[in-house]
Amino acid sequence: MQDSEIRRVTLDADAPPERLDRVLARALPDLSRVRLQDLVKSGQVRREGVVIVDPSIRVGRGSSFEVVVPPAVAAEPLAESVAFAIVHEDDDLIVVDKPAGLVVHPAPGHEGGTLVNGLIAHCGASLSGIGGVRRPGIVHRLDKDTSGLLVVAKNDRAHHGLTAQFADHGRTGPLERAYLAFVWGAPEPRSGTIDAPLARSQRNREKIAVVRPEVGREAITHYRVERILGSAAPVALVRCELETGRTHQIRVHLSHRGHPLLGDAVYGGAFKTKAARLGPGARAALVDLGRQALHATLLGFAHPRTGQTLRFESPLPPDLAALAAALEADR
Image (cartoon, rainbow, N blue to C red; front, side, top):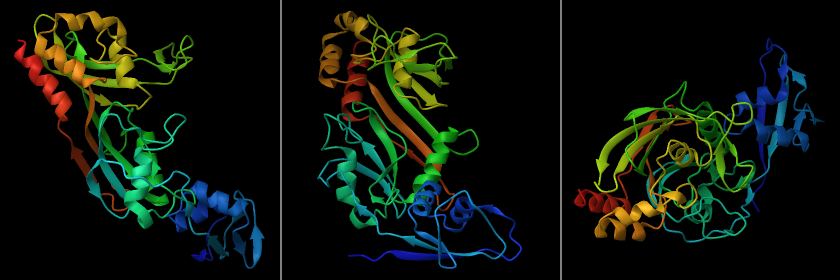
């Protein structure tokens, strides 16, 4: 069995008093502050041989500490062989191009066969542990039936750095997220911003709804119509850039504007009759699609260790490319 690692931290003689968890987080950037707080509370931090259990205690002026870091325990989800494309991988993170139909994280009804199961199998020992558990760190998600780019942390330091960027929504850093969506109709104006708060629907708890600002969370989507496809039943290919990242945000915002995604059974059910106006090729392509027509096409962020800006693009997958071609042929 792997032994616990002992990390030593010594403060400068003139260091001003400061919270212990903050001191340790600055000295040990590969461990998240939450992880360090848990270690303190569980008796894994000593000052001159005396155990400290309060992460908020103020320390300074030459204090020395020993931090016992137990080895990461095995992940609860099982390692499984799961198909997904790897766009980039290094010691800290992995960027994948998720296929439609793949659930990101185990949940009731999807305990296995998820992206997390596949990442545990693929990464193996390179996962140094998120919060003390040898598992991948999920910092953002894509719906099961949304395809495209996703970044996952392989250690605490990367998880902390990426989480901070996604929480900031790119307002002060290079975080970028763009999606391609096929929607019913031709949005007007052809570019703009949808600023509409979102919350869980009171009528159907499985759905998200636009609500009053005082009861919802801020949600902002910037959109631009790339081109109009089809004629009898116009369809627009829309590029959406997220300023926030709420559950189902793009799907709900576009539906709220009267332009739900093709194939979206949850937020576009009232538009099923429009499919009958498509040409036979486009109707067949939409049936074959079997999902909402949404793809995460662009992902950019600062590498949590080096600070280098990484930027990845993913073209339309075959099912959406086939839909686009069939709609073009309908013109």
